[in-house]
Image (cartoon, rainbow, N blue to C red; front, top):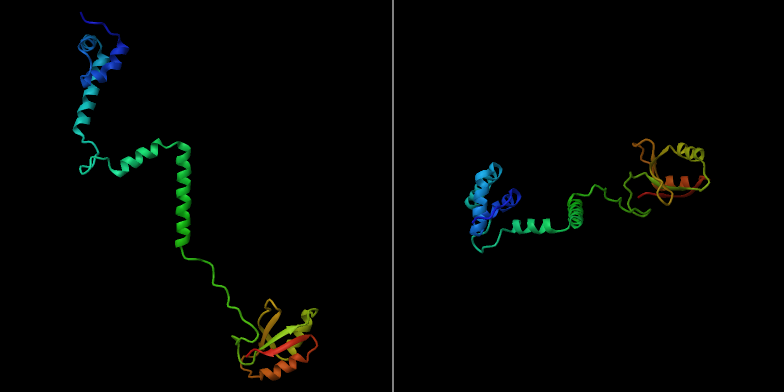
Length: 196
């Protein structure tokens, strides 16, 4: 005598039917159901095709050691990791990549200017003079001193308030020592010395 089976039970047992792992009585009950149910018959055809495809496709194992390739292991480990931890790992990886790129890119910051003192050789012409004006000097007084000696600013002021002045006419070959003495005698000038 064959046991009867309802549609839901038969449908759920179809994968075991295809794998031939059911006992004889249950298998016979499903055979009876399949003769009457077109839906389960269609599902059985799909499961048979799936089984044939799985059998035809070799397992992704490396032949040498029987272990799956590294990317399969890594992918499985990644997907069993909790979602929040995956996000943290992703952000950390992006931060490390950004730091590496930042370190490898050439620096866009300019080289700092070389330190220069009053006694260092000037980068100016032979007639240039270093000048320090009094703290309360006005712009008009400075302009009057420069015009009286036919000078113009070449550089400055430095952090210490030192200006480099040069003759307004580049062709002029004034004696820097004499020029420094004349500038030193001007009331708004506190200090004057040749640049070279």
